[in-house]
Length: 291
Image (cartoon, rainbow, N blue to C red; front, side, top):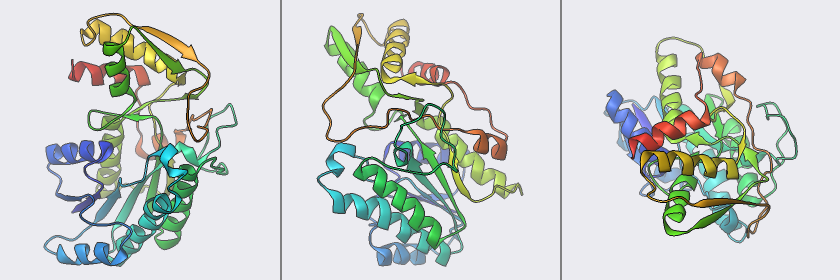
């Protein structure tokens, strides 16, 4: 059985839907089981002994990047202490653990994709607490997979695609940052990859524990992303009118974002023998599903 923690978030909801569709036995929790309370986690796992917990997937996190700068302790508890507690409970139960992390563990001051072996150097509280969470988790439980991802969007919850579609419907023009480079990631393909990881090990394939990177393929700016959202949404009839997309070099924020967020995905592609779709193809499928 899989225990999905953070099942009501953007990725967690997507995972819940796919697990149900795949007929995989799982139980999901969100805020009703506090991840900063080790005893609560341990008691929940102990109470659900009808089926052995073989896997724990942690999608829970503090993700308000700007707010984190003035809410350091809560961010630290959720992003650092929470993963450590989950790792301890996973080890107690003999469960394998999948934990989601972020490109924000890097400072973004380079021009080639980051590998899993590159040194981390976060530039804000959010990235710092996520990096520390990775360290604490691996210290507690070596039978863990950490998947770093970036620029996540999907059907459920607030994200860049939903925000752009709303603004493009309401306004004649939209200004979008044009000096940050990365690759968007559709929650559907990330969720499918997580399930593939679990199924591959069940089939006897050896997937080494440790850190992996996963995003869609391709390198763009947020401005490029917005232009393609507009073009595809207009073609699908999601947008009834054209909207001008204007590039800009800065926007109001308490913390600087990584200027370069490309993650090298060679390791996970080799481990899972996976082909990752380009970002614009995933966007097209996402918008087509919701046209």
